[in-house]
Length: 263
Image (cartoon, rainbow, N blue to C red):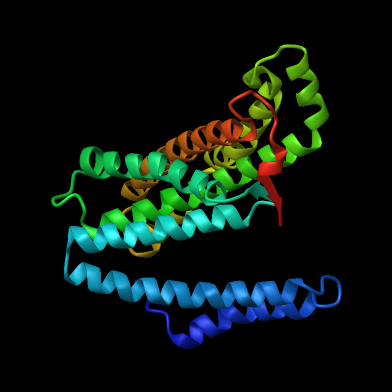
């Protein structure tokens, strides 16, 4: 595997700087967002690299669990921050965290214990990257779905309330919205599976090949990861939509858009 120097990374970073400079007049707010995101990427990945180096040298279930909890907490915040209208109070944060915990953590444990079967099952070399990929993709799907759910409920509030007045249940009143919301959450994963190997080479497979792994073995791992991500994103989105729909109504089946906050 070819070792990259700091100068190599600096050359790659020049592309981000060039993009920010080019877009400064057309999109005044974009350059700052690009530069902040690039800086966060460099700092966060450097930090996690140092943390993983320490974890690899001292394998401990406690430290792996602690890092996993931090990853989940940050992912929950990112889900909340990406929504134009979100639920107020603890629900705005809790729906994303609970949905990702139920889906991503369960599937990660299943994969580590049953599919990978490494001893110990919490080996950081496998546990942290696997959980990270599951959380990252599930986070994006849940954020898209919840944002679409709250926005659609706000825009179609008159239609929903009219259906409730006609005697429809809450599930029937939002059935069309719920279908579209779930589709918006999982369509990126479906597109990724449909294009894998034909349009694009997924990241994990590419990384393993660059590291010198046999292509066929890299393909096997990538297929496993794609299926796990699909399960995590799908079940996570289902859970988030179910919780979100429940939160939109009170115990008397009244639409409660006052529970939403605009940001």
